[in-house]
Image 1 (cartoon, rainbow, N blue to C red):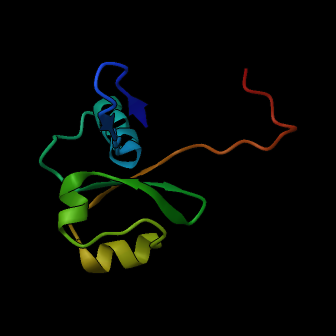
Image 2: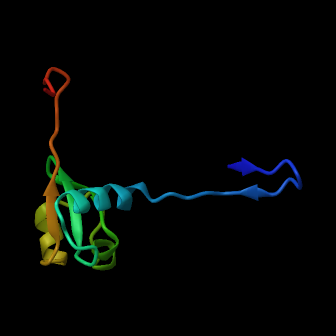
Image 3: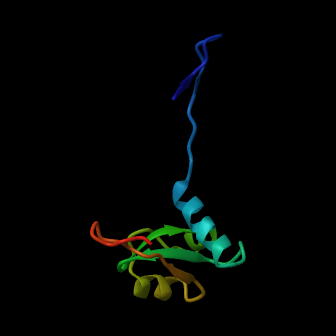
Length: 88
């Protein structure tokens, strides 16, 4: 929370990082903004676009559940690394 020194007014800033992460993946994979898209890691959804949210997709769903709710949803899988994996 930010506090103004001049008049003691408080400001609350909310950032939807879930949609941001999905938008980054959509940009990288050239998925149009108006298409529902979700980012999947392991077996569950970790981020989703606003069109996917509007279609009823929720974080934590499996890919199978997402496609039942929103057959048009584009699923983007992101890599996962164990501590022992090398990134190079």
